[in-house]
Image 1 (cartoon, rainbow, N blue to C red):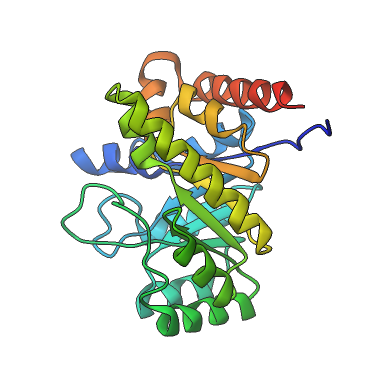
Image 2: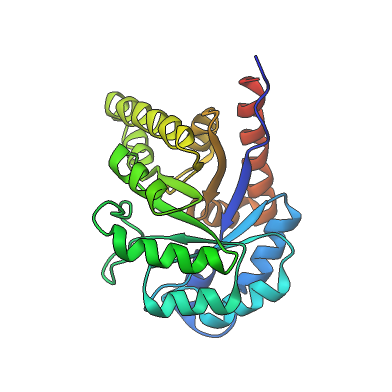
Length: 252
């Protein structure tokens, strides 16, 4: 059996900014977290600039673009404001996500199939500027196929439901969701899309989806920022990196 390639790890630093904003001021600094993540073996940094700026701020994007040497994945809604910001900064990648002001975190995937015309224009503008565009979607075939039609380079499959079912001990339902993610990843790969996964992943669930051969990158944030309270951010990322690499090696 051919050995699988190295699985990339993207670290989402949004919730470092959440902690900062809870009290005001400038600490903890998201850029410092990004640099620690880079030193600990992260392959990229993800930051979600929301309409309401509830965690990451515009100045954070500027600091990250200037301060890190690994790729920045700019998460954003497909709005004129966010498109303008992306085109101004030209990050390595942009991940288009659904966004509702009242949600605590991103709930579900983007409805690409239901908004193809608008999203195709956003993708084209970003692609023409040299930005690699990813669509944050569920594992449904119609969403994957629509993402391919509008010219996205990447799909990031939403793993939140699988992680929630696993945490709740609903193992039969989790197994069904796991299989749906597997099928979705294979389908996306067959259409020429690069496949990423993210949302809700912890040490165990990350190691499980790391076994999908089509998956090239995992993006993880909240769990690692929480784990950092107990063991430090660098060691938490190093442990995630170790478990992902071990899971990948076991499939070789």
